[in-house]
Length: 174
Ligand code: FES
Ligand code: FES
Image 1 (cartoon, helix red, strand yellow):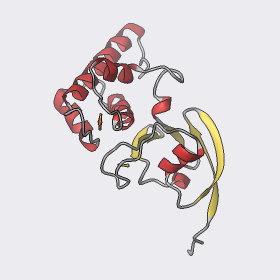
Image 2 (cartoon, protein in one colour):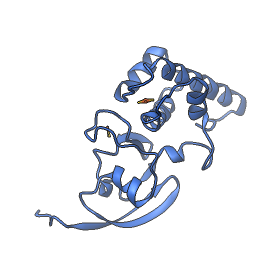
Image 3 (cartoon, rainbow, N blue to C red):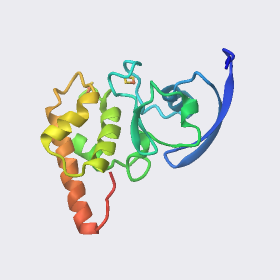
Image 4 (cartoon, rainbow, N blue to C red):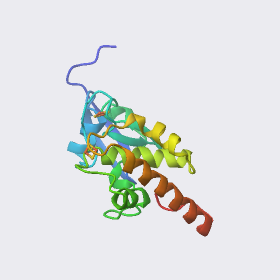
């Protein structure tokens, strides 16, 4: 099928629990849609070729690279960005608190991608070993920290979530 260079398409999706409808250029990247159409600038764009992980968001709970995904591919789906990871807007979740406590960031450019990736990882693997954490984070690059504190932050977040689950009898806030 021939697609016009200027083809546009109407999409309807949920982002961080809010419903949106927009007409977009069919070539628009999801990362650009989130940043420029919705103002959600927590999603960072680094390499733009799927290598650094700083643009990571969740689609229906699965971590994806928003620099390799078209906005039209998110039509009808539920997207979560770093702004939607905490318990409420402006509040830090357990993962974000752990990053802060363990000094797991310096410039912070990579941090939103790490937080989103860790959120998806701990949903799948709530009690990870340090090796599993390192493996899970291998798709996110950080130029500043040397990763040691990031791994500690993730281990600490996992522990807190386990304790919260045990005391509440259900999954706590990420
Ligand atoms: S900006 Fe998407 S992986 Fe680097
Ligand atoms: S804190 Fe600077 S790139 Fe990770």
